[in-house]
Length: 163
Figure 1 (cartoon, rainbow, N blue to C red):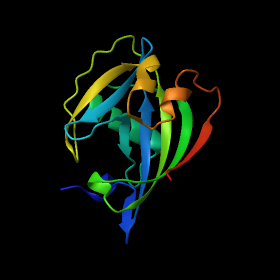
Figure 2 (cartoon, one colour):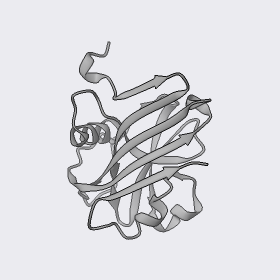
Figure 3 (cartoon, rainbow, N blue to C red):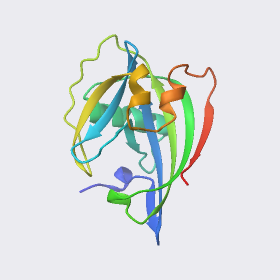
């Protein structure tokens, strides 16, 4: 059973869903590490919900370890993303609002992982995807295609509103 400190900063009220998320940008040899799972037809950033009482930095280190089996260190915060979307699947019929902090992680010089991760949609798989190939793939967040080719020197605030 989860204790109170393991509760994600996430709630659903009526037809609205909100989550506070911490995510990692992990780059090795011009490839970015993205996750996929048994059911999704897209790739997504490594990361997850921030727990109550946890900082975004603590959350991203925990989530990266849970998903990759590797201890990565944070380089710096690079993106704050406010994402408004609707979806099918596990968010069917909900108006979703996610606020995510994206941290650039320090490279380790290897793509070797020890992943055995599961999410709500089943077994997760880690994929090293060449940054130049992102434009040909279904990836979330979508701004990775453009922004990872030249990572900003400052923290960038990005707002995405799905029509």
